[in-house]
Length: 548
Image (tube, helix red, strand yellow):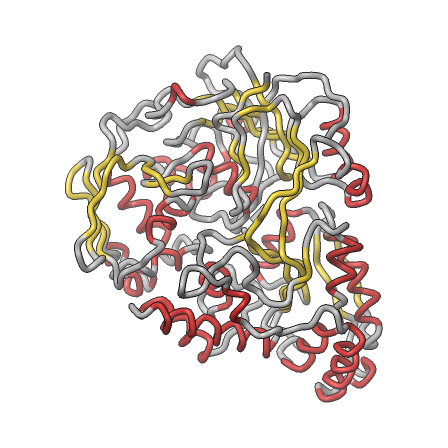
């Protein structure tokens, strides 16, 4: 959640970033969070990049943001992984078998797998990590991603060992699904499914993912330095099974909050890849060789705190949605880098036949070319909601961060909603603060966005079920939940996709959240960087990259 020809000196340095949900430690305790590990530091090539500011968390179970996920996939690896073409390929598992009914899966780990500190990695590490992610004590935002596995409900209620995953020996993991799941291998490549070290988590608690000494990983790179607010540095993991294929010796992820500072770092040659660029510079940057505009499966949307008055009023929510000029936001504010969102599930997702785009079989929920007509309907809905011309409506706060288009979008909404008599107070905070407060419900309205975690409409639509850990607006409708449960459990593809279409219709009719634009990913990349790729799921892959 999906995705510049300025003169540069050729520089070899390394850096990265993403965001999540668990409690954030502003100043990781101990010196090992800010100083190199005791191992000898590599003296070879270094790649320096910036793909986001400080992540809220890089605990694989607690992270829920793309920037955090990009950091995690460099340090950890699941049973499966994704290749440059987006295909699911073996990761820590070398082979697997599936029963004829699609319910029983057996995974065989590669020989000699080790953690970054040299300790053996076993199937039991996967078993414990998955059960930890489901446990209510962890409160993982992606805990529901394990609901395809038998025993999930009991495990999520507190029975730690109820989840039907079992290490039968050091190299064999067996999994029993609740129902056949066509995208299960995609889930196995998702960051929440990676293993973490039980001893490090239990000894350090939440701090385990903030300290170099305890952030032991099993992926292509390992953390060697972390200075909060400045950078995270990774080095090649000499214990990784595919070590010989790795690129630069170290990767340095600069953690820069200010978009102008990001651009300056790129122009000066300090970094070779830059995301979150200043919006006013996009027209000029688009003319350069370094600018990339990639496909990204995701939607920029607005969360409304439906547990807080007046956002518990569906007609008011509908009015706010209709009063948005999506063409103006996508084509002017966002410089044409995004497209107007007329639904939640956008381009790139296919329907039941595997050929027709899902969105092509959906009604036109909102016509972006009829803004005046939409605005008139919005004014009528405001009156029906009990707030004619905004009378009696308190001032509303809009919570956002300053990267990219977020503040300009907020200012555009401020003007558009003023047409309804709505007074909007824009509050700007650091990204890690926005994600934490949004999840905790400390807001009225907040900018949000979702990049698909796997190639299926449920990746977006599951977000708005009552118990989903990423349902920041706390939208809740039993009918919606039932439709998504049917989509999860039925073996009939037509029934499954029809249920998801109905669910999206309900979500749009009630404006449980407000889609604004369909994502693209834009960033600057030095042409001398080779071996890098960007995924339509929003991940940046630097583990095989070098600079010529």
